[in-house]
Image 1 (spheres, rainbow, N blue to C red):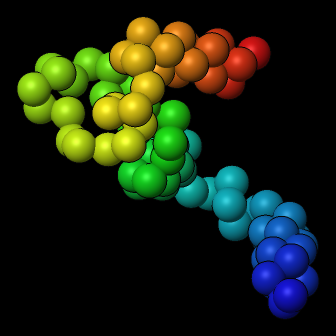
Image 2 (spheres, rainbow, N blue to C red):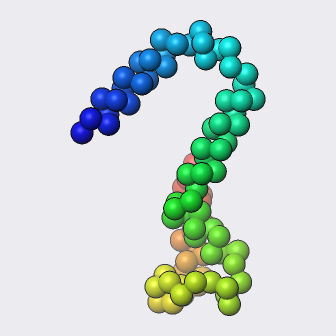
Length: 87
């Protein structure tokens, strides 16, 4: 319940410190955001499905998604997810 309040407070602090943020090189900021983005991919369902699409059928883990659903359906679903995310 307090997370939204803390998030708003941190945004206010960040907006009030734009002079300090401007002194940080852009390459450092891009590196931090890239690191955070790559770290957030772990546990993302779309990323997991994309990895499964490029995995050999013998190497796929025994998940209910892989066992109970036809593989073409999983690939089509993943393609639709990626297209919707790109739009």
